[in-house]
Image 1 (cartoon, helix red, strand yellow):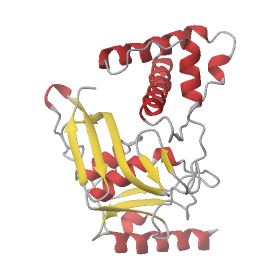
Image 2: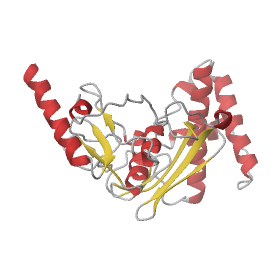
Image 3: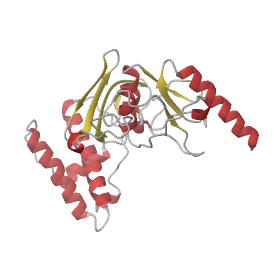
Length: 260
């Protein structure tokens, strides 16, 4: 039940974003998104589709900007409008952020489960267990955040604090507000990073004064379509630590290769 609710909200959000963007940019619309309607068009999925449609229409009604009621087919088409491959030409929306020629210029990132207080503050809890932050970043404009109701290389550097294992864009939000200093991501061999998992977070951290690169120290390139062309992994930290962290990562990778 929890999984279905989460998926319903995720797919519904994509349909809603897609619909709104098409209304606002009817002649210049390109959305790179993760979901499609394939499974929702199968036999037995009608109940889920109806729930998603209701969720989207309830959101449109509460906002009041668009006097329209979408049919289930309208919602399915909106979901499938996220099939753009992106690229280096034109403007592309990657769910929340906008991508201009491969350079992310705007990022809006909602983290409904990120605690109000710093996750690096051991033993401290948000008042009434409050969670939820909204991050906004624009190139040259810095990073802003506001609460809302709603989420071996290290050893070489001498880091002794235990790591915080966190998924979703919340990890970028946490670093941008100073909860931590280092984020390392080294997925298993063969895994390809998708741009929608990193585009908004990248600009949020960068505009807050941080640095986001691959393991070779190169900036992430969002102009290659749906996937990032990476050297091994992703490194996120501040400008002071980045040179030290890159050296530590390179040494660790060399030792790993030598041990094979």
